Length: 358
Image 1 (cartoon, rainbow, N blue to C red):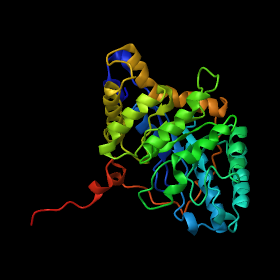
Image 2 (image 1 turned 90 degrees about the horizontal axis):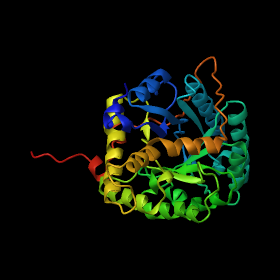
Image 3 (image 1 turned 30 degrees about the vertical axis):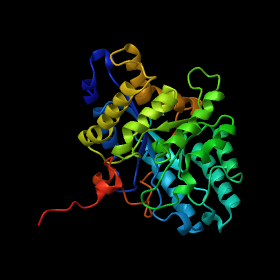
């Protein structure tokens, strides 16, 4: 029995879909079976798994790194093919101009070709992108976004600050508003855009004026609630999101790096996020009252239903057809995984060494 059965009385079982988890490459993630075991014990039906990110980024990228991007996408297809009904593979695409000798349009075309390869040859249906030295609102980048919509690929974007001092200005929430103009585009913004939470909420709220007609999923962009706002901001940010946005726009996410033990997954990701959402809902002026059947449905939307509907709409219901290779693809330039300590939802100052009395 999943441990999350204990989160409520029998009629209130809380199913989960995690829309933001990371792999770190060959030898770092453990076997796919261990990921599936953790998901099963924690009551998580499916998880989005992002391909490993590259160690060099930004101005350091050159055309020699293009093959690494392809190998990382091969890796995630291979890894998730072990359990395609539970592990949803996300390729990483990066139209950084450095990949094409400084030519942004050339880099975009390379990523269009890689998106097609990932879809048709690797069977991948999702894409993760981290804007860095390129911006989603640049007209030269929009052909890639249009291609993703035409293929039927779900797109997850980093949104908000980078505490490791990367190019955060390319990931401000308002820069994503142009995605509303691309017919058929579906994806989400990660981390509720912290520290630009208000801006992220406003960007998502634009759609309330022109939501689509589909009764199951009317939205092009949603938000994941993964590691972002430090503790001092979390409750206030969640209250704002619940008050301003429709309940079917918000999605549970951990930002977990595999491997992860079930106890740590629950204690560091599920329980804190559930507690914050429940507290915010109780304080909000729009959420259903605690103890009501409507509140149960509210929880289930955020932790499960919203993600499922968005994935099925983006992919048009076409299942993954993941390609598993004879041997695990090598990923020598994969970025180092986060340690367990780095994954705890803490503020930057708390991460500093504590003073001791001498």
